[in-house]
Image 1 (cartoon, rainbow, N blue to C red):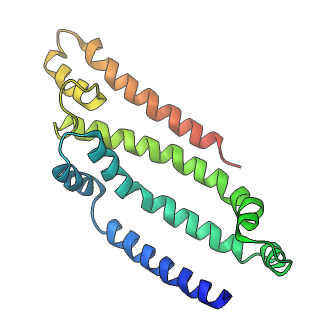
Image 2: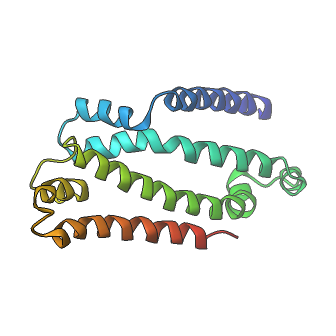
Image 3: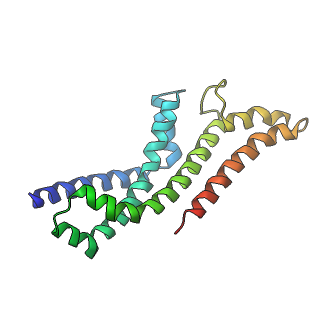
Length: 174
């Protein structure tokens, strides 16, 4: 039974690794644009495209840290004592990967905000009535001589969001 589960897990691991490598071969914004072409003008298209791009880094980080943790003597001892996968995850794996995952989540959120702002800036993002930082910047760009502070407000908001997330990610290190 254990060998069958290990073989099935190895097959799934290889499949996910191949999928992640294939997605890394294409530029991230291109993948988001492809998804947006299939589901135009909706928030679903943004989130589906960004998720398609950003899950790869979480997968690779989690896989590397989990493999190292699962090979540790403490986990092997817990397995020999008969503890199940839920216990192993809760006691051994999650405490090891949680700080790294929270840091990656802060950086991933910053990356998503930058991607949405970049797509909005080139008019590929959400339609006009939807408030979006990149679209605000591009709509205020013709008026930068008359009202430079109006243009600076979405720029400063984007900068503050990204700086806050970066500082949050830096404070999560252990």
